[in-house]
Image 1 (spheres, rainbow, N blue to C red):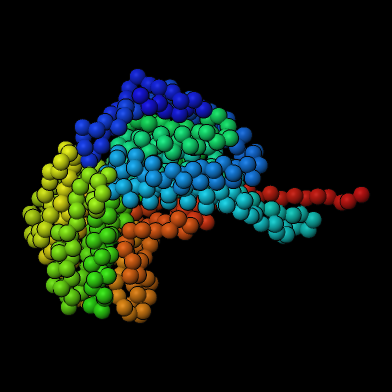
Image 2 (cartoon, rainbow, N blue to C red):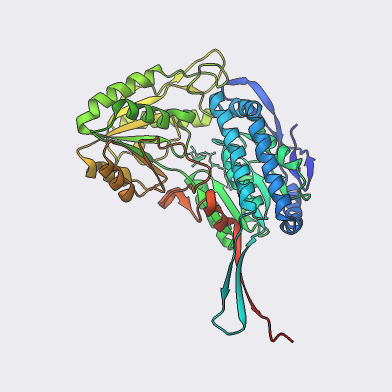
Length: 480
Ligand code: NDP
């Protein structure tokens, strides 16, 4: 059984889950311990102690730890990416890319350890100096999802450690192997015992207890809107700081002046990459009437060419869906789309492959309108819906007409339209002639409205969440 890492020790448990490969459910990746309440308690107690030691550790030593973690992730991205793809189901190349990216989060934040400027200002009172500096907040609870099991955790754990905090990490139970692999690398570094704990277990039990615990100073969560609401409510009860990144319903707008081949590539990549299981997925394609038919024809042709298969098989472009439950939810949306009057142009069915898995053909729906539930609810599925727009203004209004606001894209050759779209979009990330999915690691990531809550993640903005500000007034007195 793969143990949890608690208070500096690998600890087994009486409860465990089996981790199945979604590309081949006969392949049991391993059994993973489920942390008990007492183990979570021990993790939190030791984190508090370790955090004080870590905050007092010299910046260079802290930077070296992050740098070493990042370099190892990058060096081992092939091996760890394969493991990630085996348990999550994304094609091997995407798994390898994700692990490499995770390494970049650590090396980038290693640099940030050394870049923690404060302010020294004159007081309004004579003889008084004021200095403003950032300090760690304490123990950070990290609750992460299965769809980017290493990258999401890394963009939370790296800044938490960089700015002097301790981490208690509850990964998604669907992807524990990636969590153990990342923890093993961090655990081998020169860090105080208990600074980093891994507490695997179900969200309802271990996750809920963790976010409710008053020893936690800050909760960073990525996952569904519904669970996010509960996490925020639990955190606020203790006045715990909280940051959340949840779902979205991202639109890619295709204008009548767009390079249609580019638009189709971006749509296919944005809608079906990661089997559509991305918070940045292009689940709505808002297409100008004048190019609608030509775009749809090319889109369907390209979608039909996509090779759905085992994540680790050469040539696979779309892996399986992550779980039976997720596949059932996806098929229920296909059913709903038909009930709502949408026209299915391709895909949307479960398919068999050589090995038993959760395979689904990517689906394109046309004749949809934005008020349909399929255009308002996050599906997290390889399903995309085309919506017609008469002109630029209508396209922008449709793109914005959702309770979410993570990413939005436009494909156009017009600089004026691109600029106007950037200005009028109500999303946190805007893409011009790029897919809605795919962001950089050194700049902030997050959305508006129901997509995100609390301070931004990543880049220079991460410091806001992971630190608190201390203002010191010093009256030196007269020199003798
Ligand atoms: P969840 O929101 O259920 O899970 C996210 C994380 O929260 C997991 O680690 C989960 O643990 C944990 N969790 C679950 N319940 C609680 C709780 N009560 N208290 C604390 N932590 C909890 O997402 P799912 O993984 O189940 O995916 C469901 C849907 O969520 C998807 O279909 C998609 O729509 C959306 N989603 C969005 C993501 C995004 O990037 N925006 C990422 C993932 C999902 P465990 O999994 O072990 O139960």
